[in-house]
Amino acid sequence: MPLPQFVLASASPARRRLLQVAGIDPVVRVSNFDESQIHRSDPRQLVEILAKCKAERVAGQFESALILGCDSVLLVDGEIHGKPANDAEAIARWQKMRGKVGELYTGHALIDLAQNQILSRPQMTQVYFAQVSDRLIEKYVATGEPLKCAGAFALEGYGSLFIEKIVGCHTNVIGLSMPLLRQMLKELNYEVTDFWQA
Image (cartoon, rainbow, N blue to C red; front, side, top):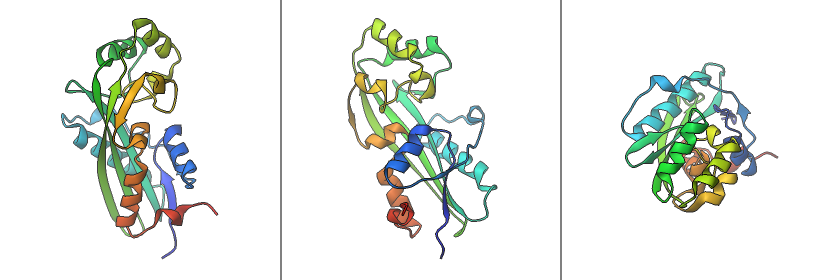
C-alpha cells in the first residue's frame, strides 16, 4: 500500500511545528469549520466532535490522504473555555483561573481515506496555573498570545512563565498529543517513522 499524504486540518502553527519537529512535514488545509454550531457539556465529547468535523471538512479535497483534525478546550471550575474573544475576556479568564488547576482536553481525529477508516480519541492534561498578579496578567494579555489559544495561554510561548506544572502529556497542552498520534497511526497499521521526511 503506498503511503498516503499526511494532511493537517488546522491553522495552528503550534500543531504544525510539533509535527515538523517530530519529522512529519504535513500538507496544511485549514477547515474553516464553524465551531460555534457544536455544543456539548462534556469536554471530551466536544473536542472529539470538533476534531472529527474539521477533518471531515477537509477530507473532500483529497482522494487518498491521512487527515488529522484537532481541537482543544480548557475546563476550569466546571466551565469549558475556548479562545477568548477579546482582551477583556482574556484578563477576566486569567483572574479566575490563577492559582487553580485546569484540565486541557484535545480531540484528535484521523481519517484514512485509503482504508476508509476514522479514528477519534480525546486526551486530557492537568494544568496548574501560577498565582499571578493583575499587572502580570494585563502585560501577558497585551502580547496578544492568549487570544490565539484555547484556555488563553500558550505553553510553548510567554504562557510557559505562568504555568507551575502539568500532569500528563505536555504536547497535548500545545494542541496535539504526539504519543497519542503514534498510537493512532499504529491502529491504522502505520509506523510514525513511515512519515519521517527523508
